[in-house]
Length: 334
Image (tube, rainbow, N blue to C red):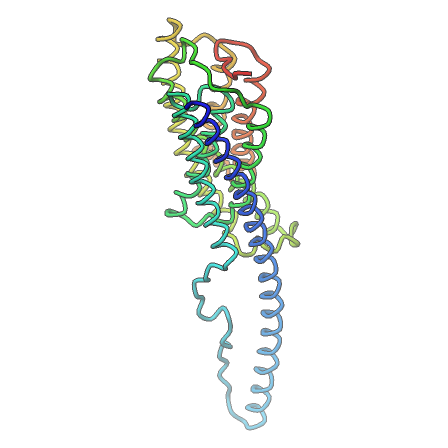
């Protein structure tokens, strides 16, 4: 029966990867559409302004010849009464496919857990499977708060890449848990860490777009026309900061829960193990980001780079530290 559920899990994850691929393509198509529409709007605006200026000049000349006065009125144009844009078909399909892929993704996590008879995040393959499902889940849930669909390519692309590496390089069969992992803290500690990673991933995506938007606003990235349809750099920074604060609170709990678990497993709260040190480094990076932005006025590109470096530290912690550093937390399963 175990092998059957393992097979179901693999079928579900490969199916999810295929649908994530289509979603990624459709999100990219939507960005291309934004660029095209921005170029058309700029051209139409320039043409409309030239036409309006010529019309006003003609009216002024006629009134001057008649000895009267003229009243200039703003021309009615696309900017006169802004309306909420409707979501194009490509974006709707991209979101629908992301939801479908995520449902299959979660099914793969559940089947793996049933096959193992425990929570499915005891080795690198299982953690990759679960963490990416939570990252995509956070992306979908955040849409009820803020429209961040323009990050769809980043999130689906990241999930697709992580699942590809996980299934090809990290896959291991279901095995019993080591004694140190046979604890309820495995459920709490790793789940909260994975959930906080989802918020940090979104914040990193927003920070990347923020850097591009800041260059466009400074006149250095004018060819990236799709940026005209996205929020301003300061707005993107604010959204990234809010998501980072949520992730930081969860990561703080992760650090505390890990210390409590370490005391239960090894009889000490802190031992300067490589994994423990990198978890603390990540916490310090994000604490520095929040402190510098709140008290030192670090805004703009400096705060964006800190958010990106923090997320890269998380990726480094999961990959390089797990694979090449030995310690009490060496549970890669490889």
